[in-house]
Amino acid sequence: MPLIYVQRLGSSDFRRAAVNVTGATVGGGDDPGGSGKDALVVQFPDGLHISNTSRVSARYDGIALAGQKIALIGYAWDGGSNDANMNVDAILSTGGGANDTARTATISTNGGPYATRVVGTNWANGRDTLDLRYWRTAGGLYTVPSDLAWASFTDIAVVAMRFDATGSERTTGYADTVLASEVVADLIGRLLTDDGATATIAATTHAIDQLAYRTLGSSPRCWRSLLALESRYVAGMGAPTPAGTGSVGAAPSSPVRMRRRRRLRLPGQRRPESNMVTVRWRDSARRNRFVFRSSVVPELVAAGLNRQASIDLGSDVGSSADAIRAGDQFLAEHQYALNGGRLRVARPILDMETGRMVMPWEIRPGLSSGAASCPSTRSTRPTSASRSSHQRVPGVGRRSLELDSYATPPRGCCPLIRRMPNPSCRPGGPVSLSLPEPR
Image (tube, rainbow, N blue to C red; front, side):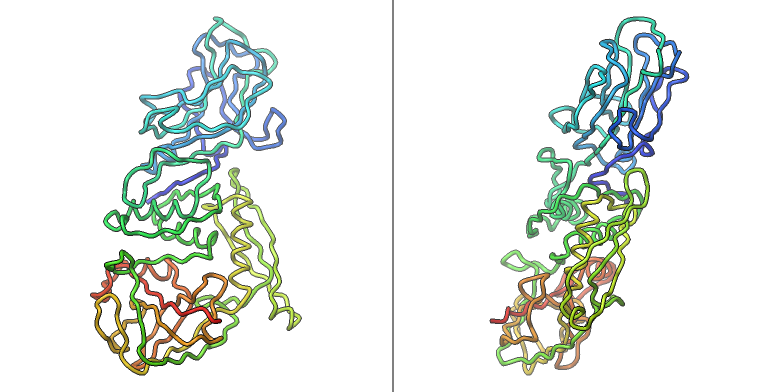
């Protein structure tokens, strides 16, 4: 399904609509107001005859087409003339029908600064279509002189309404950016409404200013985008417990041994550790942009090597701030080798969900999880992604667990949702093994 959280709009996102004067134009390009930004421009050309209620309007209905509603809009505007009989408005409607005027001003060469308007305060809940309109309010018949009857709009932003983790629609608390934790809550409330009340979501801090998916199959892509921007966090689902959590605990009653397998690359990826990365993203005008980031990788410095990687954010996550964030998070993940190895269990261990002792071969690959009390050792040191080593179990031997690195929603949650899991775990439950931090 299409999903829009926050989107920075360019002129190509708008179409001509509700125009009642032949010859009026809707277009885009450099801002005629001189801001140097790309702008949406609506205009009555030189010599055109207009009268009261003559209007030219540009419409954005991407949120309506996604089946969502508008929570917030923001933009700055400028004008080609000072005319008390001409207004520039933002109209919020339901599919072009019932509407509210969210923002209005008399046209002026001074323009108007960037400002936001929100649902509930400036329009009724349920509006899903935005019209930016330039029109004549009074003064009678008028002939446009010298191509000065125009209005331009820049820095246009829209935010769609979201759900909380319980599936209730949020009607307040919107900004012109979104946090990854808010997106996770929306996905839980939108797709897994029975589980939201017991969900635990860590608050994130990076303000995402572009996160929009216009095509089907958006949920897995959304997870991948969030992990690119907030790679310090992991996400997963497990069976509920009396404490309201979804993890399986493994508390060995006898010593266990772990042998770390040294890696120079991330599991599931072919690229080794990297100290440089180029990030490609697309701006609101659909132009390719690039950001270069670098970091210090001790092992590469010691070897006298440089390794450069590349990230393609596609057209879904697109802003300079988000590209920088994705690049920095990628380098942080690729600065050190992640943990991996084999955990050998000498006797039965406690399954903290069922309360019974289980043998190692009863644990299924990818679906069992636990919190093991292991002796502190350098082989179980945490990486920068977590204060403890949460690891996936991709393979299980009769008395050993092959440990991989962090399970991520695209590799963990999404494939598991489509198949029946261990009866002790509900569908979609990737598993983690928590090892103590070394002293």
